[in-house]
Image (cartoon, rainbow, N blue to C red; front, side):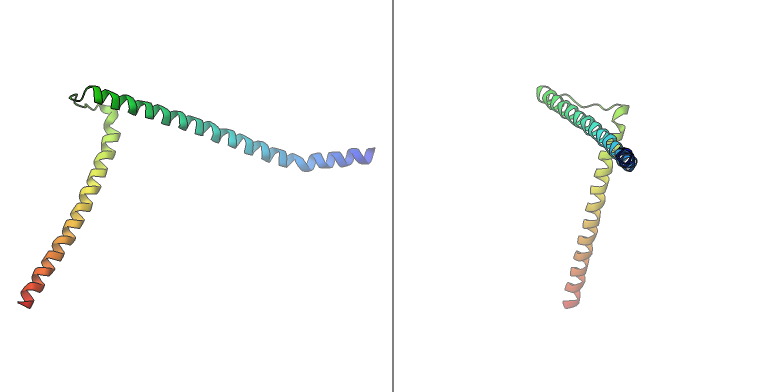
Length: 111
């Protein structure tokens, strides 16, 4: 009987770190689940807001949009995208211009 108690105690001591590890993993999983639920809720609310906005725009097509201080971040992000596109087009234009200039040189040399 005593040997059995000692054996059970050894198993308990041996399995205690495993239990703590599993409890920690469980807590992390619960945190991830909570974050995913919050993200899902946020996306659902964002979708509803977009649908409401689209419905409003359809009902009031002549209404002009106005932007407040809370819109600055979105406007900056949008302007950054526009500036990147503008830069991209300028690069394309420069490459095309260089190609046209090279063609003109080749035409003058061959003439």
